[in-house]
Each structure stands twice: as structure tokens, then as C-alpha cells.
Image (tube, rainbow, N blue to C red; front, top):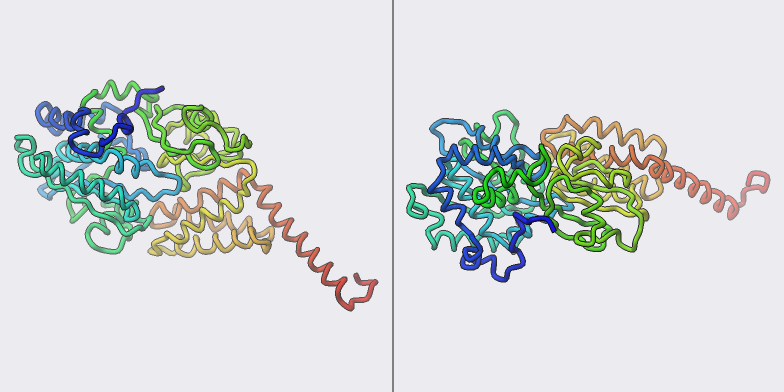
Length: 439
């Protein structure tokens, strides 16, 4: 069994309380950071560890911290816990079962980035997770771990838990900041980037929940220890959210570089395909990533390897799809999500997601035609790279990769529809007064 870092001790009863968390080494990393390191030294430590963002983009964490503008404006930290990518449920687990680990990571990161006010933005639907984090923050305040002169140091910090209203777009960092400022969750034009002009106009660092939950372990174990896990360019472990047609769906922490096949088929993890069906397709990083065929099942789960086969590691939401699945129907379901969650700010995404759904509906329900397949590709081309934020691009991923990998299924839908129309016409003719010579 590989060594666990982020999910270590999750099975310990009462780990969500301050007392139990401290019994298992909780907040030792914070004390070590405040007494041993200067802020810039902590930034260098995280750079050396090779930690990359666990929210989707995979940007080097220490490098992001180092980009913060050096000016007189107040600095802010935003923890992005607005977990809403379909197929992803790791952050919810971390917040519900070990909220103090996240809070400790927020405090250490804030110290490293010279932040005095931090926000934890929790998705509105994650009610229990929100309550757990709020309770952990309250306990930390009462124990002097947040507030004025933390642990007797000259460092002070306020942490605010903010619950979102359930908009997928607020997982995008600039829309998250708009929401925090009390406005509608619309994405902002970049540049300027948050590291320069972010929340309330100040330099802002935005990190994912899992990313921040990893920080205490790196401070305690050291950068070289953490870098010993994973691959040369994808360091550490990752919590993969396995779902779909597998026997044991769930969250599994594995070193980056572990093959997809191990996650799906190993008895310690997925345990194989449900009903021992054949694997047909894989979504490697949440529904916004490109589909992979079953022939890519041995691809290592790291940023570079997944990119090399034409997809992204994304949020770590691995979805296994079996041989009985209609890919047109599955892609329609995903596209409906992006249509419903489009903020409507830009025309390509607002109009494109609607029309892609309409065309897929036609194909799925027997009214499609051959030209619809080409039209879908054309609409995707007019959205991808031309929308205001990444949601537009995300909406096209399953369609473009699905047509590429399963074109025959789309064509079958068209052919079957034509055959059924012909059959209906034939039945109608037999039941009419049409002369026999024309039947």
C-alpha cells in the first residue's frame, strides 16, 4: 500500500476535532513554519517540492506564490473549495473528515505569502463540509491558532469561511473573486491576473483545497521527501476520484504516475469493472477533459503522460465507462450540464452550449441527420479558444473527443433514425389508401 499523505489518518474517529487532530501531529507544521522559516524560505520550499495545483490546471504552487505583486496593497488568499466538476468529490471528503488539515494549510500559506486575511470559499451544496470548516476555524480561533500573534509570534491572520450559491462558474478563480466581493459570479478579463490585481484590487493567491491540505505535510517532511513520490515532473501524490462503472468507486490517494489500470482494476482500489463488463472509455480528469479510449488504460496518471495521449489530468475525477454505454447519450448528459451552468456572459458559450445540446438531443432521440455531426464539430470550433473563460472550452471536450473516438456511434444514430423514419413511412403507406403499385 503506497504511503498516504493527504488522506492519512482519515479513518481515525474524531479527526475532525481540534483535540484529535493535534494528537496526530496537527498544527506541528504550523509551529515549525513560524519558528523556523521566513516567508520567502517557505515559498522556496514549496517550489523545491514540485507541488502543482490540484484544482485542474496543475500550475506549480510555489511559482504561483512567487508571482504575487510586491506593492503596498493588502494581500489575500482564497481557498477554492467550490468543488463542482462532474466526477470530482475529493475536496468534500477532505473538508468533512479532516477540516483542520485544510485550515493549517491555509494559515501556513498565508504566512508564506504575507497575507493577513484569507477566505475559504466552499460550494453552497456542500452543507456538511461548510459546517465542518466553520467549526474548525472557530476552534482554531479559540486555541490561538488564528487571530492575533499566532502561537506567540508576531504574525496575525483572519480566516473567513464563505459559502457560494452553487454556480459552477465560481470555480473559475476570477468569478470566485467577483462572488466574494458580492457581485454576480462572472469571470474577469485577464490580464491583469489575480497575483497582481485580485480580490478587492490586491495581490491574491488562489489555491485548491487539496493543494492547501498538502502544505502541512511538506513543511514537516521536507521538499525532498515529498518530491520522492510521483514522477520527475509530476511530484507527490494525488487523490483520484474514481466513479462510473466500477465495483468500488471512491477516493484513492496514489503517487502520480500510477497507471489508470491500477486505479480501476486493482483490488485495493476500483476492483475492476462492474459486472465484469469491458472498459469502453475513460474520462481522466472530470467531465471537462477529453475522453480516452480503452486502449489508453495503461497510461500513467500524471500531468505529462495524460497530456501526451490527448487529454488532461484536470481535477483528478476518473470516470470509467463500460461497453454498454451509448456515447451519444453520455455526451449529451455532459453537454446539458455546461449549457445549464454557462454564466451567459459571452456569446460563444451562451449560444454554443445551447445549440450543441439541441443537436445532440436530435441525434439521441431519432431526429438527427448526417450533417449534424459536422455541425457539432463546427460549433465546437467556434467556442473553443473564443469564449471568455475556460467553461466554453470545457463544454466542447467530450464532443470533439467523442466524435473522434466513436464516430461510428454518431453515424449509427443517424442511420438508425433514417431507417426508423423509412419504416414509419412504410407502415403509414400500408395503412392508407395508397395504390398497391406505389406501396
